[in-house]
Amino acid sequence: MIAASGNESDREGNRFHLGSFALEAAYPSAAEDFLSIGALTDEGKLAPFSNKGAKFLAPGVDITSAGLSASSALVGMSGTSMATPHVAGIA
Image (tube, rainbow, N blue to C red; front, side, top):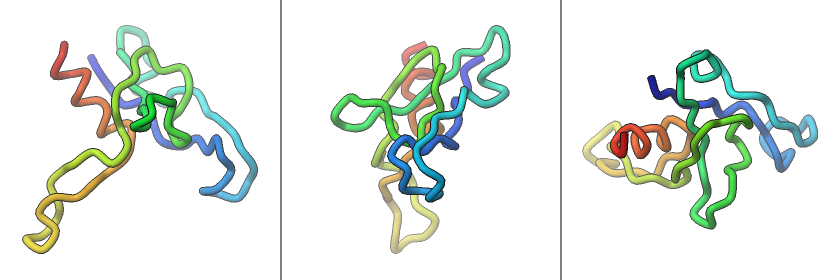
């Protein structure tokens, strides 16, 4: 099974204003026999929101995806759930 590791971390201390921190991969990705997927920036660095401990990393920042309406048919989205399909496709 392949699952996103989660977006709860804040390595730069900007999102939650609690200072910088990194959380472990969230369940279900942290469970045994799961491949947890973290997100990379376009510079190849771990995305600041991506939880640590992921087994694989893939592009997950500003990934072109389907929007919610005709006026925004394609939008850039970020998250470990945007990185996970890259790994699933390769697998």
